[in-house]
Length: 585
Ligand code: FES
Ligand code: MG
Image (cartoon, rainbow, N blue to C red; front, top):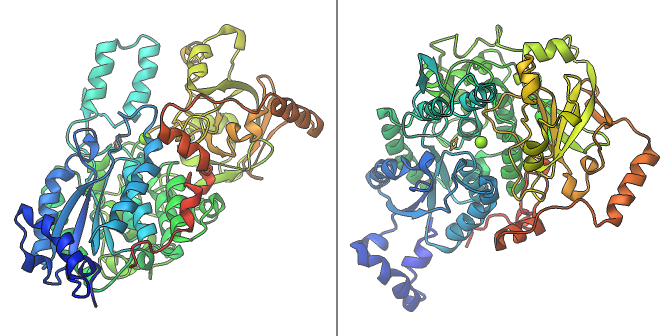
C-alpha cells in the first residue's frame, strides 16, 4: 500500500514538487532518507498549551507518544490545535468547538500525514477532534490526558465544578466568606489533568473509549499517574499499526459503537453535553443519531458509577475501581451491552477487550443488578415549548422526586408557574426581585442561551432558586432552557431545547405567569395556553423582527451563527456534514 505521505515526499512523476515539499522539513534535522523511506508519518494533534491548562499535560505526554511512534517505525510531526479552555474562554468555550474542528480538518487534509493521535481532554477538545477525524477519515487514535487527582477540602472530596455549585449557595447564605470560597475552588484543582468529576470532560473521554477510539483501559487513568505516560507510549505504537492496517475512524465509529456509547453514558451518569457532541460526531460520519436514540438505547440503563455530581467519588477513585473497563465488564456480564462485536482501535472487539475486566470497589462502580439508581439515561421531551429537549433523570434528588415524581418507575407529570429570563444577565439581575414572587411551585425558564442566541450556547440552564427560597431550604427548582448545563452540575433541568428562542422555537413565546406542564411519561412539555393565543404571540413577535439576540462580537461569531444547526442536531456547521473521506487523495 502506498502511503498518503508518499504523494508529498516520494513522487517520482513530479520531482519538482517533491523537492519543494521535502526541503523545508529537512531543516530541523530530519533526513531525506527518512522522509522517503515509506515510514508512516504520524501527526500528534496537540491541544495542550498555556491557554489550555486542562490539556497542558499533553505537552509532556506527547514525548512518550513520539517514542512509541518511533519505536514502531513511524515518523512524528506534532502540531497545534486551536486552543479551547472550558473555564477561561469568553463568551464560551463551546463557540470554539466547531472552529477547532474546521482547523484540524484543514491540517489533516492539507499536510502529509498518514495517521493522527488526537490529544483529548477538556470538554470541547474531545468532540472537536473526533469530529475532524470523522470528516477526514484517516487512521486516528485518541489519547485522553486523564483526570486530575482527587481534590480535598477539610477532609472531604472537592470535585471540579460540583463543589463550586455547592459553595456558591453557602456564599449566598453567608455560611462562608469569599476567601474560603476561593480556597474551595483551588482545592478542587489539585494537579494537572481535566475535571475530576463526571462532567463533560470525564464523560467524553470515557465515551471516546466506549466508541472504540482509545486503547481499552486508557480513558480514566489520572493525568499524573505513571500509567498515563505508559499508555501514551502504547498509543504511539498503536497508531503506526493502524496506518499499516488501514483502520479508519469509520471502521470504528459505526452506529453500533454509538449505541454502545449511549449505554455506557447512562451507566457512568454522563453529562447532558454528550448527546450534543456524539450527535455531531455521528453527523460527520453520515450516521443519523438523534435525541430519540438516546432515550431508546440509554434511558433504561441504570446508574452504576458513584461519581460526582450524581454520586460521591471522583476520577481517581473511578480509575482505581476499574474505570471504563469496569463499567464494560458489568454491562457485558449482564448481557446488556448492545454490540459487544463493535471494534476498538486496540485491535479486538470491545467484547474481547473487556471480557476479563473487573470492578475492584463496588462502592464506586455498583453491580449492574444492584445499581445506584434505575433508569439513569436521558428522557427526550417535545411539545409546544420545543421540538426536542433532554432531561437527565439520574441527578434528580430524592427531595425533588418526592415533590414532583412520586414513583420513579411511573414518572408523573408536573405543572408549574413559569418565571422567564432572557439570558444569563437577566437571570442574575432579576432572580431576587420580590416582584417575581417565586415560590416552590415555580419553574425557572431561560432563553436566548442557544447556539445562535448566545453564540455556541451558554451553560446556564442550571439556575439556583432565589436566596430567600434557599434560606427556606428549597435548594432547587425545575429549570427549562435553550442553553446547556455544566456536566458538573446536578440540577433537575430540561435543557438543550431545540429550536432555541433565537430560531423562533416555542420558548420565544412563553411569558412569566404561564402555566407549564411537563409529562415525563408522555415525553411532553407544553405551555398551557390555546393554539390561537400561541399563534397571536408568534405573529406579534415576528412583526417585531423575531426574538432578539446580541450583536456579533467577532467574525467567527457571525460566520457560525449563519450556518450552525441546533443542539439536537449536534450544533454542527450545516455545510460541513456533507463532506466525507476528506483525507482521500
Ligand atoms: Fe477543562 Fe473541566 S474545565 S476539563
Ligand atoms: Mg463544562
